[in-house]
Amino acid sequence: MKDIRWFIYLGIAALLAAMAFYSCSKNSSDPAIKSSIPAEVLDSICPTCKSYDFWLPEKTKIEKKEGKEGNQIILTAPAGYLYYGLANDSSLFVWDKKVPDGSTVTVTCVCTNGNSEDCNPVGHDGTINCVIRPGCITCERQEKVMDPTKQTGLEILSGGFVNPGLGVSFAQPDDELPYAFEALLQYPEIKLQLDEFMVQFYGDLSEMPVISTEGATATAPAGYRFVVLNVYGRALVTLIPETKGVSEVGGSNYTCPCNGTSGSCKVKSSFGYYYCVKPSANPCNQACNTMTVEDTQKNIVHSYNFYYF
Image (tube, rainbow, N blue to C red):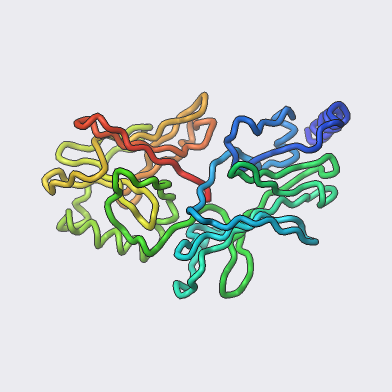
């Protein structure tokens, strides 16, 4: 199958010799950046390329660096923003909080078969694409976060930029928050702050209700409402008893819509907090990166997006 794909690629390269480059993106959902190369060929050339959005804090510094080991796009977050998430070995990124500057992430496109100069990252309209020329047969995209103490790059499995200084609070109606990712709940200090926040509304955290999360929509049980929390600058949803009189951003219905053309997304719960994932059966053919909380009484829908940086 690989040989067939390679012959297809050679044929396309010959027919489209006038093309300057190909774009295959892991982080671009811009419909204007679409390749005419068949999907099976792109899968062979750059199997890690997917069209996902990413989020960067305001005032993030973006640089391009050229070097012998390949070109890089360097993203340096403003002071106060650190990169939390999982490394490729599934361990948590843990930083010295005394480091004053923001985390730095590098995006590199490595040609694993062919000329290294024919596989490079290019930024365009807030996206970063791996640009492949005919001299590169296969390309691999890598994202690494810099360890500020050891000055080494750690390869990223998943995660995002957060601001620990923001702590845990209720989200406000005008907050434009990317929503939380699962790895946040694995950080002991975050779980502790969440627990301390939630004991204002529960005498015992074991009282937090457990609801069905089998589908794309979850409905708050009688006597409760979903509320949106601001956790380190990320939107995270939980349930609060209505008897507590909480009127913050929230509602009765929580939904994880599929923005693709087929399949579905589903609501997932961990420790009483909610976010969106792809189900194993009939998954959405696009990223499950939107969540909504609907206040049926006020006829208001609060929408948040998940970003992969």
